[in-house]
Amino acid sequence: MTSDVQAIDFASVLASTVHDMKNSLCMLIQSTEFIQQESEQLSEPAKDELARLNYEANRLNSNLLQLLSLYRLERNQLPVQIDQHYIADLVEEILLKNQFYTEQRGFSIQVEQAADLHWFFDYDLMSNLLNDAVANAMRYGNKHILLRFGQLAGKLQIEVHDDGPGFPEFMLNTDALDMNTPDLTNNHTGLGIFFAKLIAKAHGNKGQYGAVELFNGGIYHGGVFRVTLP
Image (cartoon, rainbow, N blue to C red; front, side, top):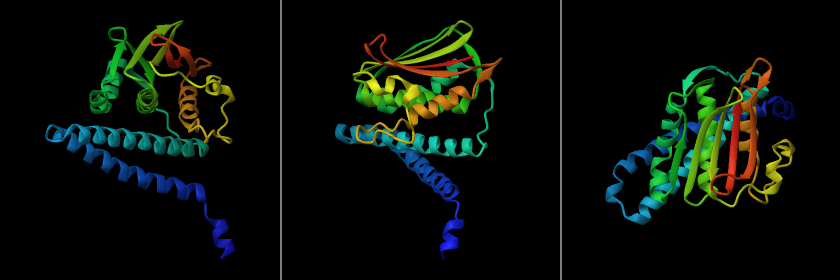
């Protein structure tokens, strides 16, 4: 019995379980989106609760995706498909994913981007990274979010500004974040930032690699999440 237990690859078991959980969550998210289409028949408290349910389900789905990606990265099985994509398509997807929650909670998401801006990156990985950053901004912000896209020194720079209290001091130095000692007491695991850094560094060009920065201030004097891609 002991030898059988020792023979189990718990990382693989966990990955399989997470995959099944993601499938169930996707069905739950689809159900909430279906109910949203009939939301005019719901009371305002019910709409608020539905919006919160959809937000939390999407956030949990994002966390599970991050766990799967970390597992695949450890096994050298994380595919990175670099191709040319228009930023406008990425923005449209992010806004649609969060439309019901932002409208119900009265959030305003402003977008600044150059016309026809495009870049080379893995669309799925960057979509998940940016959506997680927006979800974090909605979680800690009040009413305003800015998505800013531009080029600086031959690199793509993406920023998410919010009007919340800003990032706590210990998170501002992303190099000091340690996944082996997460700050569970303050509800900060660091998984999202750790995942974002891995995605950014997976994008390389001519010896240069993507990076993630956190700082406070910005246009709304709150938190600013920045990712730069070569």
